[in-house]
Image 1 (cartoon, helix red, strand yellow):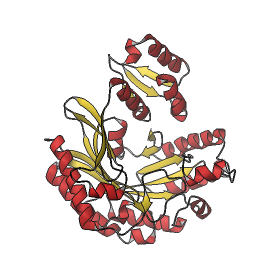
Image 2: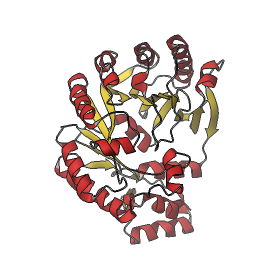
Image 3: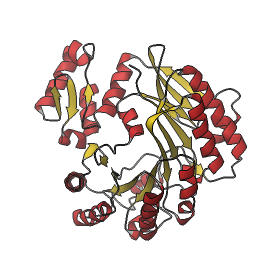
Image 4: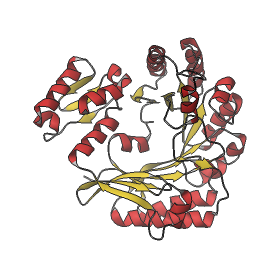
Length: 376
């Protein structure tokens, strides 16, 4: 059986860099669309030669802000993916966008390229919170963008960030309740995390503000499960909630540890090539990526069994469905690992039923600790 295959395209530019962001992003610059089309085509053709006789389940434009990319670049990538692999019936083509007025003006043209799912970086429905998060849109423009997106795309999703400083449980209840009234079939709800090297990291270390307390963050997480479940959008992953059959097909490829190709500056990929699991990473600097003579890959690594186990658990335990454990996994072949798994079961952090390992709701809430205990 051939596993699903996805393509991720990284567009590295943003009009501004948000203070919580640690992605490979750069301030928007002058773009030569012909140069970008040539570089992305070069890499797509390279990876198509490595993955013959397969069709794409998903194509995902992420970033950065790919809605800032020239329409010709988006069209070229979609046409090349169709030429090189072809799309499965019902394939999902997703593009990330922000709800600014300028980006809203391009929604119709983006949809005309074949993009059928829009992911909106709303982040909050409160103007004060948007200012704190460094966003360049208002709550009203976010609401307008959601409405406009629903009239242009088959499917939409949008993101919200919770566990913000001084955000009470009632504040989060009001904001999420409002978000659920818009009728989107998918929501991504992310707890604010302080990533090393970001502006927020520097602010917290300078004691300009403090992150939300763990207990309040946990209560807000539990409230999100309650409200989204009641609205018909239960969690299928730690941070993602969807109506039946509305899950992100591309992200499921990641979490199920299936195959995906990464093109664009800094993009990562995971592929099964000649029976081996291979990790790829593209050159991170856009100018170096564009100037690469043959293919913009900086790293290609064959993953051993332990590395694969770490990735399978790290990704798969995020999902409500969990992962399948195999007979040669160390939880079955190594006494020390077996004891760690049994302890996690006894602590009600995971369940093991018919060879399927799943994290409980509490286990997902403390997933980093759980992974450390299982893999450390």
